[in-house]
Picture 1 (cartoon, rainbow, N blue to C red):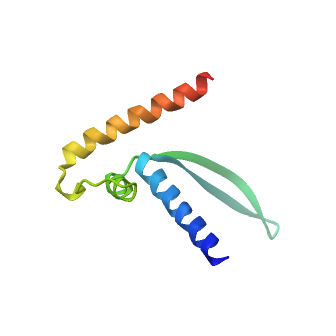
Picture 2: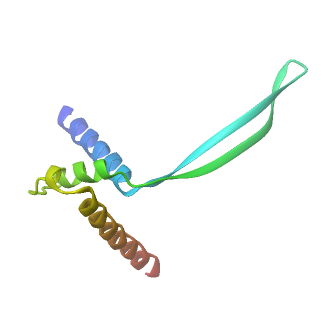
Length: 101
């Protein structure tokens, strides 16, 4: 039973790392309340979606986990940025292919 939990935890960490590596949208909710006759009443709710950009450190780590034999600490940030753009382009193309079907 413990092995299954460990595997699912590893998958959850890997999924979170992937999300951080490719970027994601974060939703922030701000609520304002007012006191009306001793009760709190919701006056205003503001929901904002903020994009979180891809993280190069997460990309480096993810590439290392996925069996990359290359020592990424020796790769320049410019080269990593170039690779990131290439990977994001591939991901976009795959997502567009999925939307067409």
